[in-house]
Image 1 (cartoon, rainbow, N blue to C red):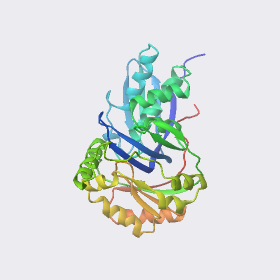
Image 2: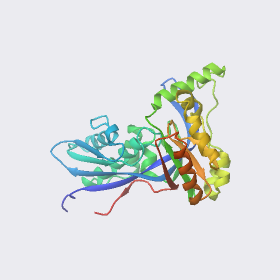
Image 3: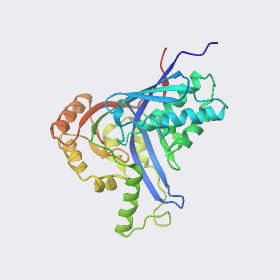
Image 4: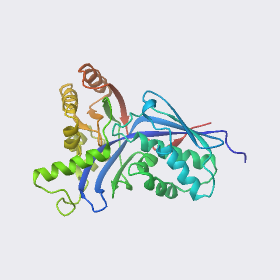
Length: 310
C-alpha cells in the first residue's frame, strides 16, 4: 500500500473534575488522584512526509507555540521514530484551538495527536498500549489526551483507569491573558502547605484518593452532583500566583454557574452550567465582567484522539 499523503488527528482538551495532589516525592513529583474529563475543544494535528522534521502552527494562540524540538508534538514524532529505527522526517502542522498554557492540556493534546498521526502515516500499526507507553514518557497528561472520555489518573497522572461517564455536561471556560507555569504552581502548592504548618512531603500529606461521590456523579450524568464534588488542590496555589483569578471565579458564580474552579494548574477558569442556555449566559456575563480575555462554551465528555477522514 502507498504511503498516505497526510494524516490529520483531532484531539480534545481536558478539565480536571478532581485534582487531588499528594506530598512532594523525593524525585520532585507528586502522586495524584486526577479525574480527567475530555471536553469538546480540539486541536487538529496534520502530519505530512518531509525532508526533515519541522513544525508549523495556526490559530488564535499560534504565536505562543514553540516550533522547535521542545514541542511535545515534535518529541512524540522523535520518540516513535526512534522506537522503530526510522528518521522522524515529517512536517507537523498544529491547528490550535485549545487555549495555550491554560491548564487544559493543549500541548499534551498535540503530543498525543502527533503520535497517533505519525503512527498512521508510517503504517506502524502500534497497539494502544504501545502508544500509551510513549505518551507516559512525554508527559503526565498526554496518555489521557489519547483516550479521552473520562479517566482516573494515578501516579503522576499517567496511569489511567477509564471511568463511566454520561452527559452532556455543559461547560464555560474563561481564558486569561498569559499563562501559568505548571511547575511553578506545584512549587507554590508545596510552599503554601509548608507555610500552613501541614508539611509538604509524602510523609506529611495523605495519599490522594478519588472522591466516590464525584465518580458516581460522572456515571449518572447528574450535573448538580458533579458540581458539588468538583475540587482542585492546586487552586489555592494558582490564586496565590494570580490573585485576579478570584474575580473571574466570582463573576461566573454570580452569573449562575453551578460550580467554578481553576482548570488544572490554571489560569483558565472552568464553570459548570445546568444547560446549554445557562452556559451561554454565563459566558457572556464573565466576558462582560472584563476579568478574562475570552470565553468558550462546550460540553463533555468528548472522544480521545481521532484520525479524521482523508
